[in-house]
Structures are given as structure tokens and as C-alpha cells.
Amino acid sequence: MAELSWLGIVRHGESTGNLAAAAAETGRLEEIDIPERDADVPLSDTGREQAAAVGRWLAERPPDLVVVSPYLRTVQTAEIALASLAGDVPVRRDERLRDRELGILDLLTTHGVQTRLPAEAVRRKRLGKFYYRPPGGESWADVALRLRALLGDLRRDHDGGKVLLFGHEAVVFLLRYLIEGLTEQQLMELAHDGTIANCSVTTWSLDDGALRIVDFAKVHHLRREGAEPTHEDEVSAEPV
Image (tube, rainbow, N blue to C red; front, side):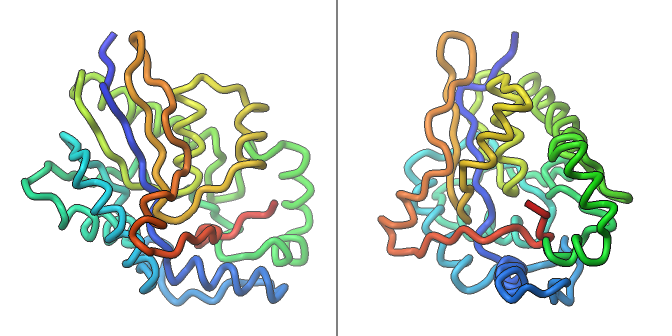
């Protein structure tokens, strides 16, 4: 069976939407004040510094291919990071790496969902985080389906290659679910206990015919370069 020799994913750098989401949650507001659509939210100044630090880490291990979520904050992270590479690396955008779409819950805080859409809060609690699909949005299972297709294409077309992805928080968790064969319960425990920092790096390497986890949400490259690690939620704050 075709397999990559190495796979990595970088969560995008801190965005202006991350900051707005954190402020809204802390202030117990119902809605996050973001003027752009989610796909157009840019990096903050800190996010740009984090992306540059990723570039210096990347210069030591250049990939054969880079695949990027089309969302602006992710594209900017990749562009800044890749500027440090000496040679040209093929880069392509793939919408299957985009963030989870929250539909009717978009831009609502945890408090906002409980206040404005109490029935949805109850339905989500009953179904669980993995299978709950907000009206007009996606469940984690839906995101896993598109990521499964992406992984299949990468394995088939780049057998033995080294591929680096730039994506989002939920994408990192779900790649672990798919690559490592986790159960729903194991994934939920991982999501509950784990933190995917902005511009953190998660990597897998080929071992005995399968990809094995090497680093999970590591930020050592940020600290080494003097960039501040941040742990803000995604632009669309999801009820806990």
C-alpha cells in the first residue's frame, strides 16, 4: 500500500479572529465581532512572527510538497514560512483542509449558543461533538470524510514523499484520528486534554510500513526563535 515517508501539519498563526473570539468568550458576549467572513480573516502581528519562526524550522527539513487550506490566515502562514526556503517547493491549495464550517453557530460564543439557540445546545450535548452537525454546518465526522479523501490522494500520488500541510485546529485532531486509527472516544479525550497552539507542528514518520506520530502540537521552534506561543480558539468559537 502506498504511503508517505513523512507528513507534517502546521496550524495557522494567531489571527485577528482568534483574538476577537478570545475577547468575546472572556467578556461573556453572545457574538464574536469579526467584520470579514471566516475565510478572509488575516493573521495578527504575532501570527506573522510565529509564521516566520516556522520558516526557520522548515528550512532544516524542506518537504517535497506543501498543501494549504485556502483560508487567508492559513495561506499567509504558509507564504511567510515558505519564504525561508532556498529552493522552490510545489505548493497547492486544497479546500478539503479548510476549517470546520459551523453554519448557524458561526460567530456565536458558547454563551451565545446557550442563550440564542438553547435547543441546539441540548442537541449537541445529546449527539456528542463528533457527530453533531449544526444546521448549515459540518460535524467532525464530515471533516474527517474530506480529510480521508485528501490523505488517500496524497498517499497514491506521492508515495514515499514528504508532505507538509497548513491547516486548522480541528484538522490536526482529525488527522490523528485518521492516521492513527483512533476511536471516537480516544479522539474526544485527545481534544479535551490537548491544545493545538498557533503555528504548532505535528508530524508523523514512516515506521514499519505505517505513519507513526513523532511530534504533537510542538512549539519548541517558536520559543527557540523568540516568537510567543498562543493558544486561542478558532475564529468560529465552538461550544465546549
